[in-house]
Amino acid sequence: MTASTASAGTEITGNPAGGGLPPALPARAADLVTQVRGTGTPFTARSPLTDEPTARVPSSGPDDIDAAFADAAEAQRTWAALPVARRAAVLLRLHDLVLDRQAEGLDLIQLESGKARRHAVEEVLDVAINARYYARTAAKLLRPRRRAGALPILTRTRELRFPVGVVGVVSPWNYPLSLAAAEVLPALVAGNAVVHRPDPATMLTALWVRDLALAAGLPPALWQVVAGAGAEVGPLLVARADMICFTGSTRVGREVAAQAARRLIPTSLELGGKNPLLVLDDVDLDRAVEAAIRACFASAGQLCVSIERIYVADRLHDEFLRRFVARTGTLRLGIGGDFDADLGSLASARQLDTVTAHVADAVTQGATLHTGGRHRPDVGPYVFEPTVLTGVTPGMRMYAEETFGPVVGVYRFSTDDEAVALANDTTYGLNASVLSGSGARGETVAARIDAGAVNVDDGYSAVWGSIDAPMGGWKDSGLGGRHGADGLLRFTRVKTVARQRGLDLAPPYHRPGDQTAAWARRMTLALRLLRRTGR
Figure 1 (cartoon, rainbow, N blue to C red):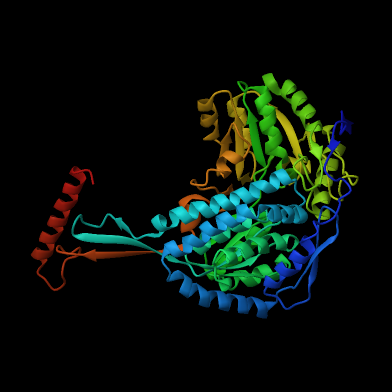
Figure 2 (cartoon, helix red, strand yellow; figure 1 turned 90 degrees about the horizontal axis):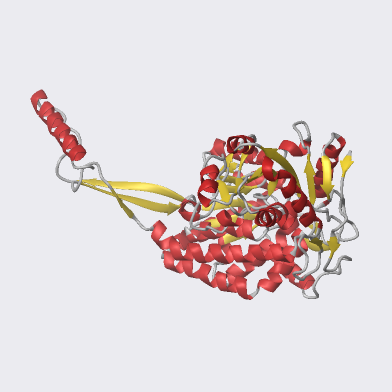
């Protein structure tokens, strides 16, 4: 075991004792859980801030889920018949309500996920951005489109879009507001209904945004919420939905994809990642350190696109490491409801166990711990210090496995080619980052990285915030993606209607052979003319 300057500078801020819930939250929680379609034995959700109960949530059995799908399907037929502008108006009203009532939403996000308030704000803003974007673009994206026909003028071809029906959404605990709304809102504005299973640990946040959607005018039956363990409820959703959206681990994602494939229903999967950040040799070190801090430690590293591997050019490696370790040691830990903390808590005992095991395994096998590496129960039951290691090698768990916590390994490289090879040496391909003093060079390197999202001079926000562009994983990081036109059109079925006028596209039957030969010559001539005219 090798350690240096471990945790010496970490500051506690906010309310390290945990405090308790804001006075209005217990009553609000009891009201929100009445929205769940469940008649089974209730389960108790607990807050990672205090390990105290937050809500008793009724579980959903097969009969509850059958009823949810039946009601959703009936409501969907009426909803799909409405003009797109009527559906979009609900999203615009939701945009305003989320911003107006964000204080309560931030309290719930922190209560259930444990993250610092500064990171909870990202979720509120993301929901508002998604709501506004799809409200403004849905009509254009969904309208019938003229397409080039088989023969100009003579073939009139149109592309039509129809909702898939009832979409099953399984959303995770780490971004309980953002990752629920990113699936549900475009599905709804496309004319679908949704049966939604949020993670049991973060039910209240999902129910809160649904409650706001109802206040914005959404018919209640269109967004059904069911509850229970993923292994029990998830397969019931996949067995009934017309499409399934899942965000979670690659292992479970494979199971979801296999079950969906047996039914031949479309899937959209955002799965795991082991995301790299490249620090090229022409970068400004102060900017690089700040970008790396945010990229690695936002939401205590419990972010699908969080950086877990940093590769630094040889010339800058030692100085970057010195500054990065020093800056990491100044980060403030806290679980209060203010904006003072830089990092909050891990979300559960299970997550704490995984993070602790990854760090211990690496150090035991010879990695160097530069800062962090400790559980901090004095701050909160699942708080873990931001941690930086070097000397992480193949065979150590954190070298290739997703840690999903505030832990990062720092490595060195000699050339850009080597950096790209190291970045791509993973089964995942979700997110990456390139830091360079030259935008052109950074973009050139970024284009060579095998990931669905690559940020230049930023950790993850540049791509995540570019809502007009698609974002999805490569390799073991998923199928499909959210955002942009693709993020809406994935919730539709496409139909092509083509009308032929004048010249037949096939020769008539029961005609003499010379007439068929003449038709073939005419069609050949037509194709040559199209080629010459650039069509």
